[in-house]
Length: 413
Length: 111
Image (cartoon, helix red, strand yellow):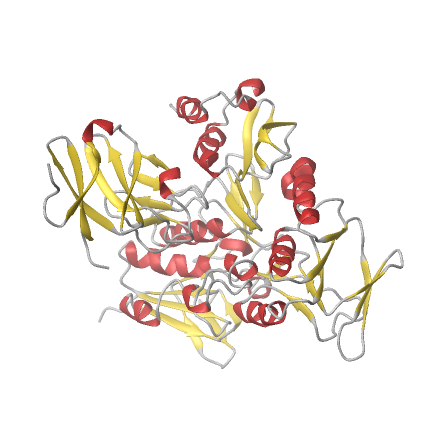
């Protein structure tokens, strides 16, 4: 009798879903068990801070597959179930209801969880975090009542997008961050200032370089107290101060972790037959000679697919060019490239009009770039980043330069 | 010169260039003609992920890239090949006759 091999995947977000479907597309005919601790089957998270929160996209449009499609692909779902223990020697998982799932190969796509603030008052009703569909449904219901005063703590991508959505729904919004500008870590000062101006013009009150020391309220949050003593009246608080990778299961099993689950360029962890991908994985990039952990959407999908191929022995190094986008009000931001040190910023377009392409150069090479309301330049910009092209900054900035032709020449081998 | 039955005139064949994306519309629905080498394809003109006009996108090899969030679609099949789009673009049959490009009104493959 032949026993079908079983591949288990813990974590039913995009990375896990992408891995499961890639295994089937690549011809794997063993068992696939996809385990997720949320009740919902895998869904898109990017709209949770944008269209879904704004009530413009219903939840049924967020799912990648119907339950029937998983059945057709013979992908066994274990939803609403948490893996509580992993024994890498016996190659088995224990789920929270006691079920033992033995595996031949295991992929960990356990994702990340929002960092919780522990200052006084953060346990009051009215304090929200945003990661899951349930989180977004609860927050959206509040925001869509309009006329609330919302304090958003953290002006990274999630915080900035929530601030924009809340404002678009007719709420008063105060956006608070320890850093001097929104999204400044990812985008730098020039683009951070652009987004600060966008939010100010939309009527968001910015409190940068500020810290919330305490929340107060009788039975519900009513006031945020800043470190400088300022008191901000509020009905709702949304905290978006970053995430921590969900490494507990791996760590408990003795798998190497360091800012995530440590994997090589083939998504292999320190334990045999155990792989990791997506937000939780801290992966080695041979070209850069260092590890990266990327918390963006496309990365989760591509990394999950790459890990699936590795599980099938079709190993290719995972060396993507990271990409992400953000939509706030009528501003579309797209970014390509690695978050690495850059020494020169070249702007093409008009900062004041919020329509600009920014090139981040390192030693003269284009290493990353952002387009703001210039989506037509994205492919060209991407080719320049891929080629790490060396282009005269004056030429890059010149509106008369045909970026498409320039980038096609640059990417020619 | 009138369009064959079930087809609509899209553009003159002399306007086509390799890698070109050309808009036309059927009952106010935006569609596009895409050219790869000598081959001509017709697809829906709006991304399946979010509202974005694909005529502003770009073709590389056989992939049509959406300008707004970088979704990729195979020009031949309409299949979504790169996230964030997951649903395919509807494709339409193309006929070239007498220097004109005609596109079928009904989808090539029912979806």
